Image (cartoon, rainbow, N blue to C red; front, side, top):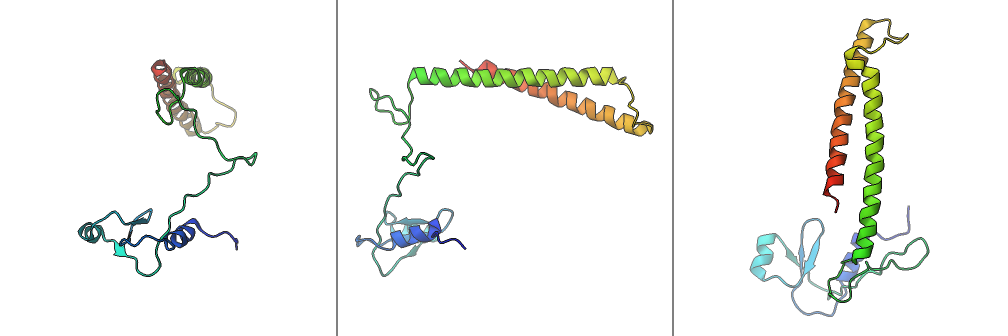
Length: 167
């Protein structure tokens, strides 16, 4: 058994040790909500219960550590606009170019799969293999190839639509 304390228990312990004197409610649901911002009527409507006894303290959890042991950095923001989470145009262009490259690679692979399946299907007249002495095995393989061709065509069309959406 692990020595780590589950996050829910840790949160409950942190929540149960505050200096606030307002009525605090514990509201059900994932995630469980601890709040003092509800009126008694609102709390009753939501099925919340009051927490009696110890005051509650809420502490912010530290940022998770990356593999290098340094706290994860916040996203690069545009300092001139004050919009949190926005990235600059150059970085977005790099991301768009990378996405386009990945989508084009996937498109090329999907087109190759489609071409190979169409060649093997040969308009429903594919060659029988040595292990297909039973004619039904041959028919089953042809039906599977036909389904694969339809799926590969849909994949190619979807990838082309995604590429067309890129700036």
